Length: 493
Picture 1: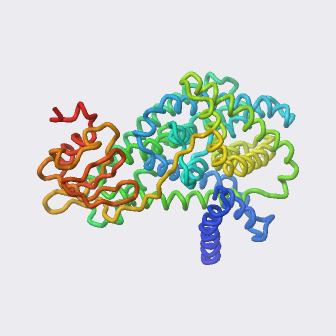
Picture 2 (picture 1 turned 60 degrees about the vertical axis):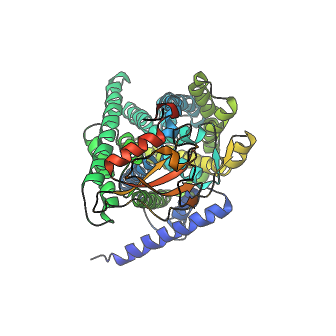
């Protein structure tokens, strides 16, 4: 009987190496996922570790599960107020932009690789979407933010463009293998995936919020486990019903992250940790699956395809998608440059392998080379490119609050957190002027990472995170007064 201890030890050592690699990546100024993949390749059969691993289906399963967890965490961390102004351009970028990228890359890749047009378009579809894991990792590890709605647009695009990329990839695999000969027969499937993904994702978020706020589990550590179960159930249930699980799990996280829930901070920290673990594990396994000795044979083809994608296809797709919304050219240039490729294209490249497409190995090696090139060049130069385009804004270091929301006290009150919007009734007014409900107590104000114990004279400002002690009804009344537009706030006049 095979002992499990060597397997556990090996997995622990690899994960520990990934954690330490993330620290090294920050110091070197390179995306951590690049080192995760490198660590996996080093541990593989061509590397020092000599681990034999060729299970494509297992890799696909691990990658899909990891992406679902990463997308859920990305949804939780995304603020609706930030993405609402860029919802239309981000949505167009995640659909029409993906299709345009796939078409342009596929046509040119056909000539570069000397393959049939269907196979070239399949390669274009595989590399057409930006990767949530790569984008979230790079954007949130930098000490400068991107202004003008660029960052939320990129995060929205990377979280919502997987359905289109998956649809194009699966459709072209079926066309290449002869399982279908018409795109029109696939369109109903795409519509079904988007509609079911959106509806079930919101439903999953609504159920998750209801469970968090209404079920008293009695043990704080069980609440993050509950949200993990909700995320997995939302993804798996949506897929089983024929919807897009990736879209559903992202919207589920987005719903939860933008509604008041108990234990918010502990839940967000838990899923941040789970997302990091999923990211490390996914890239390690993808690195193990690759044979580095095969990559030199596709070096020039990989470089040309990467150049086509980065210099031609992505910029054209961005221009087509964003010009109608009058997005400035400088911002378009940054959006085009941050079209990072990561785990999603590599995972999609396993679909032709599983389906037995003749050119599948060539496609996988080229896709892997393109991803490495994209992450190495685009990921490491994000800062300089953004500064050159003059679209950076400083991001303050925010410390976690010394108090956080928890379960209700015996009198029904609990700590609740809300952010003061710009031009709201709470923006610029002292607490004594706000006439908050009598049972609402402002406990703490987080202002750019500095914590203020307020008095009646404390004047709130846009962006402040306010910690309130209140029951459900009182909190709703206080929230309405603090966050409504100044002229519309209840009792403002």
